Amino acid sequence: MISAFITAVGEWITGVVGFVVDAFAGIVPVFYDSATTTFSFYGLLMLFGLAVGFVGLAIGFIYRLLQK
Image (cartoon, rainbow, N blue to C red; front, top):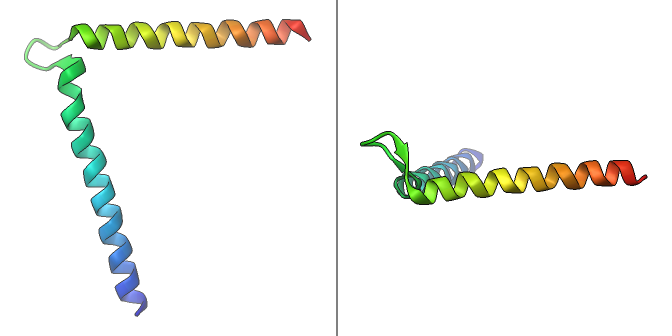
């Protein structure tokens, strides 16, 4: 009974990991072109958005730190 449960849990974990890996493999070509080894237009927009977000978080953190 316990070994069947462990087997079932192992299969679930394998399925979830396989799903996540397949999802990332399907999304990556949208942001990165492996043929030219450069970011696509959407990849550059994503990087710019991340940079702006991190700068905004840093400015907010510093502002709240100095406000006290």
